[in-house]
Image (cartoon, rainbow, N blue to C red; front, side):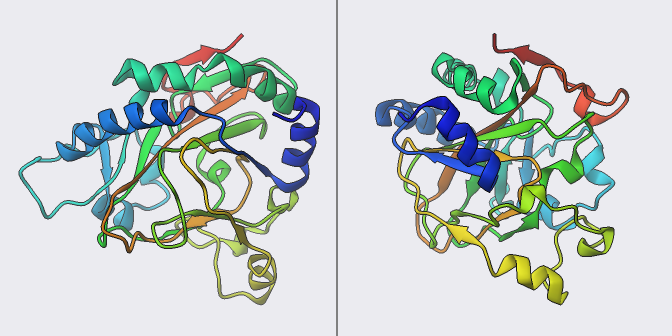
Length: 260
């Protein structure tokens, strides 16, 4: 792997960085096998496609999880929530020691796992998933500053057909006006100024074991899954230890794990 300082410089310049082949493919298979069981039985807490499509900005502030009848085949799963406490395989990856020096370099502080946000197995179910619209994660979170990094693990190939991530490089450094976002806090695609930024979007095919680190202010999205195979990814978020969550918000409502 490249030196941590070099990787951190790329991260701060673009708002994201890809670590190719970082995780052992066998480890990815084991994580995916467990996740598929939880997905098959829709073990709560989860978020469904139906919930996602109806959720407004205020709903994102509430602590909730859909209770799903696993016999209801009409329900399409969008993500498994609160995965840190579901299985040791998830937990061990989310506290992986080899990532800590790099996260410390990027954050400039001791990394702390926040289980309030992400902490999920993200799913794109075959032919039934929806697009993930352009957004910045930070618009839904409540912390003193933006020293937050999300860690995305590809458990299989992710490409343009099954919902690979897309980013707008450098967008984490831009102060967008409120009008750039709609009432659900998604980045609007109709204003000319927004289209100028979105024209710079990039995406990269990810392979099993690739890890993407991305900034909480980076504009990103993903397509629907048009293949016949579920696409699963594990994502969690770390913050700088000195970056406190705002009391009384969802960001402060769940435990944190110091990765020292």
